[in-house]
Length: 242
Image (cartoon, rainbow, N blue to C red; front, side, top):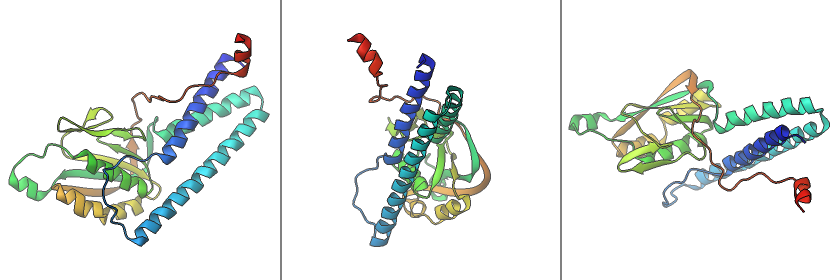
C-alpha cells in the first residue's frame, strides 16, 4: 500500500473517530437540580433514542462504504475516500455551509438601556444553554458572532470577558446564525422558549429570532487537536522491525 494511500486512510480513520465523539459529547453545563416534569424527561429519552438510532444507521452506512472500497479498483477507492473526506469535514464544521435557518440577535433589554449602565458581555453559561437548546431543536450548524461552534468549542470567561474559540465576544448586538432541518419550526420554538423568558430576561438581555431563506456560516478555522488518537502501525512494519 502506497504512503499516499496510507495517509488518506489515516485521515479518514481520525475523522470517523471524531464523528463518533460528536454524537456522544455534549457541551458541559453547570450542575443544577433537575426541574423537568415526566413529559419533558420522556421527550428527552425519546430524543436520545433517536440519536442512538441515527448513530447506528451512520455506522452501517460507513461499513457499507468500506465494503465497497475493498471491492473497488484503486482509482475508485481513492475517489470514494476523497468524497467521504469532504462530507465528514462538512459535518464536523471544517467547511463553510449555507442553508435555510434563523438569525438570533442578542442585545441589552430596554430596561437596561434606561439605567444607562453598559452591559459588558453575555455570560458563557447563558450561551452554552442557548447552544444546547438549539441542537436539542435539531439545529444542524451554529455560529456565534461569526465563530463556528463545533463539539470541542470552548465557551468560557476570561477576566470578565466571554471567549468563543479563543476569540473574545464582540460588542452588541451579537448575532447567532443557525442552519436547521426545519427553519420555520426552530424559529417558532425559539420565540416561545423558556430560555428567552427566564434566563435571558434575568440577565437583562433580549433574544429575538428572524427567519432566513439562506444563512451562511463560516468554517471552523482553528486546529483540531486529537490528544488521544494516533494512527495504528501496520503489522508488516512491525514484522520488518522484528
